[in-house]
Image 1 (cartoon, rainbow, N blue to C red):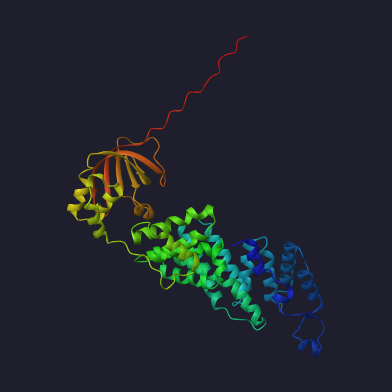
Image 2 (cartoon, rainbow, N blue to C red; image 1 turned 120 degrees about the vertical axis):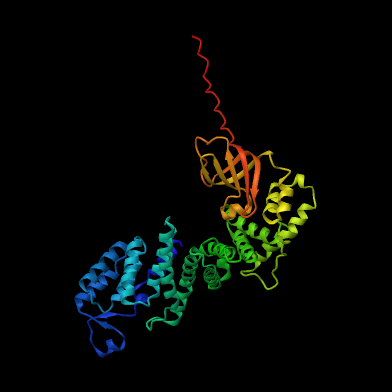
Length: 426
């Protein structure tokens, strides 16, 4: 979330933060107008605090007021303004102010929004998975409370609806992130779809958190059991369509993978792009033609010349065919030396585990096990894409692993000798 958006949701003026007016007057008319009576010294301290134009000075003055008048009748209103002031320069103190405000007013939607947004932002920067999930779950709990918050009597219907419209998508986003993090695909799908429905459609087409969450919705469909490749394709494609050019490569691979996984090829994909660009959700008549079953595809592959099959087709037959069909496609390459390109899953001593097929790369599992002639001086980094020249040896079908021996990594090119200029003649 952009800082300016966050601050605008928390920074409220005196009259929008509270309808309370401060006066020494104790006349019947003052009471009828809804004014809160307080001693002149307290009223002066409050008015001094809220009149500060510098956020840091205002926060200091409000803290001083609360310390001097801890039982103030307008403590909630002061804490709300304090939270708004801190939101412009100190996230930690913003959270502290929100905590204090919720102790006084557990239903305060702005404080619940602050807790949700700041905790989700905090989780985004955490690298420990357990800690990250704990923070996301905490953000989601505040978000759930925010969605259930009821309108205070002091806020007009119009102001309440406007506030709800602003904060609701952020609440659903936090709930979706927490669900996705713990593999609760159904919970993530429900939250992210509710988020998309809570905003004008044009906001779903703009670079930002909502478009990013459209991609997370695609991931939730992909990670469902069983995966929903059709909806994964639709939402990942919609994200890629509206993403800026420099970010399209981050989103398009999942869209293409889910489409090919379901359809079996790239043909017809332009129709998906057209539908995803024109619709927020798949229309009733949206369909993708399903690919042949693995068994059907194996039969199709084996009708051709098995000696000239692509490696990806051989691996597919080995994985999904009968033992006899697997032997049929492996026999022509057994004991042959080839170059294989894959992503390093692990490197230990003379053994490399690589992800070579698209399925293996997405799942981050090894489908090739290569024994090297000798251990490299520097082991390839996990996640690096490398070339290995090796000889086909054997395979297992379930899980599919093709084993190779005699592997060699491409030798590093020797640096050209430094050119020394000829000595000058005197």
